[in-house]
Image (cartoon, rainbow over all chains, first blue to last red):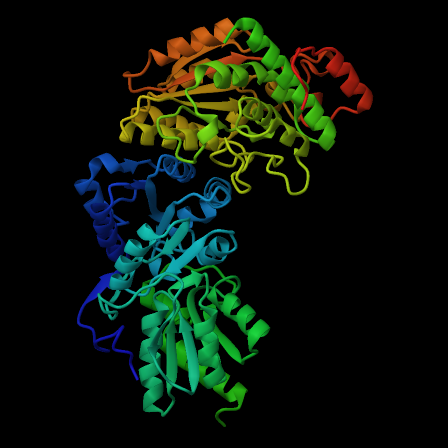
Length: 327
Length: 280
């Protein structure tokens, strides 16, 4: 049963990149609040920040190829009441500047929104130097940090508006390729509240980011075989909505967690911790198996590294067999 | 502030520094003693501040950023003596459950601190961001920052240095504590900083030099730096200091960068520092 609060159609006609949802959300947030400022490290076009830059040139700060300084300047800009949004690729938003984020933003409790595009393998041809797969883990480990990973254009736009209202540091992760726009523009979105997109009692599929649509495709294919999957879109990695996940697995008895991230340290690790403490449940992960990425088209990479609907279906069959719910 | 009163206060701050580091049996006395004159002057004479109504935003106030956070003892002493928090709290420095963490932090809510520092090289970026917001908010206030000379080996400093004049940040005055020392030895030996004045000038900053232990020289440098508002470029003051200033056996050596005096050394230090004010 597809939840119509979130999804109108399982055959969406439009595909857009999530980064464009960020660009549109940033512009709208800037129109609503004069205190919003934006900083970018020489990737204004890639981050789709041009709309904000053109509308509010006095509130847009080009920092050049100097991400460490960008994080520090953003932290300083919170002093005096501004709400800075930084924009660069996910790799340069996290690993490159971890200590700056740790000390000047997270430990200092600064209201900085770290907005990260081109996350994961779907960056594509640029290869592993740019395809960060560890970022959600790094950011989730930081006290005070909220971590969000959005599923499509509309959700990224909504999330951008939501983080503008949220007090405290946020890591907002999105991507490069065009993917189906399947979430309703007026879907309820609340930071920290997972969304049950389809209801089912046979297996829970917990997914985030680009893998949410793949999970939806998988759930349809599984339905054809008589397996009713409950797909949960966990757009907020931290704080994790443990209750929604536990409520589901208590009914289904098994779970697959799907993310465009390393299997260590991401959503899968967090769900495993949750289940181990509160309700031990057979679980499988759809994630990158402790390796770097490589060059290729996004679709080729997702196929090779096992991060698509087909891979989710296979893990569902595996975990259901392990749980003893199918022969 | 009267010269004599400033001297008294700076001397008392030095007494506080050695007593705090002795009490914690750890900390960084050398650089703290070397910057006691500047930070005392800034907080007791130069900066427009309201210690009784501290808030994070500091609107319509001058702001100070300590980038070389390990010299926290001197900052804590000056903040408490200026009225940000009770001087008795200096006794808790570096002890469990204290607001006076080893390096400055906001986590425990110590009034006067607006961002954590300690991991070096980050404070200039923060000071620049705060200065830009003051411009956006239409303020005519100033932002001051302090950096160690060894700290200038961090790359982020030079990213920030390039950024500030590009964005017309001319309401910022940054000081460099040029004591020529760092943990492993002299800056010349560890990683030669070369022509610092030339480096900052090449990054399009106004560059001033002065004696960091002469209040009049510091006053003149600050007055000159303030004339640079409207030029679109910040000012750096290369401040010649002596590490350990005021305690003879700590002066001029990197040995007292990060160790505490024992009981006898404390007594000897305090005997050299007569302020006429009360200890905490």
